[in-house]
Length: 392
Image (tube, helix red, strand yellow):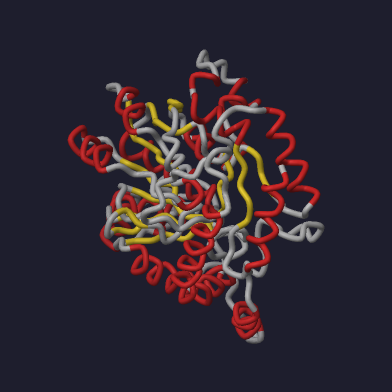
């Protein structure tokens, strides 16, 4: 990470014990480096932690997004996918890569995730899925949305890349939708440096994900029956090289598996400390200037969300100037840099939808930031941030 900041977005996310675990593995005469038993063990433990039957590790959260949209195409067909305008680029990119059409809708201000009524109003006969992003550790699902999608038989896909350990009622996020995606990038709740995970309770999804992360190879299938059927139906092919899908190489490494296994036992504690930190953060905000009425129940905040209550470009510039002066690293626009409809890749698609139609997303785009929240923050951070904000 960039050391020029006194308070960076993340620090100390790889502990000495994690490095020691990797070193012990590398000391072997011939250590396995591509995915193997450590990855399989991490997948098993991660499934147990999240609360799903199956996990498939991949090389990044973005790859998890891509693979999910490809699986949607193969199992449900091509169509429209409803997605928020406030999300990471890989969510919308994955929709485009798989040949689906993104339908961009607004967010709810209290949890920064898809607005339920906007989603329901956007559903058509072409809708194949709703791809919901849990932003920065908030629980972004409503019971009304869950129930209505069940009634309409439209799958919910969860992007939980920024929200490890957040809860919706008694369930962890990532255990509710048809498929869910996680990221283990360095700056997230836990890390395998790069890395991601797909979670599901659907054996058909699990089987497809296993093959599609490895070029579509049938030998990577999860179930022997599928392997047998492909071999029987294609006697002219070498059983080791039967490709069920035109897929990619998204395989993880054993080093990632080792790091995941080393960090997972501590994740619950990381999550609890982030919750404590976020409560302290909200206490220092002036509610007449900054938004404080977030949906905090079940949160697992990846970052501190600093959002002006009212549009004010002069105040925005003052906030950024003072944060920089006092060494606070920040990102304007929250996840993905704000309103994706304003990005060049979206404009090239020729969409007729104006960025201004996403009222709440557009406000965050210009008047919202996030700052780093991590377990090793001390009281000095909160005292100094309070001094900085009170000076504006």
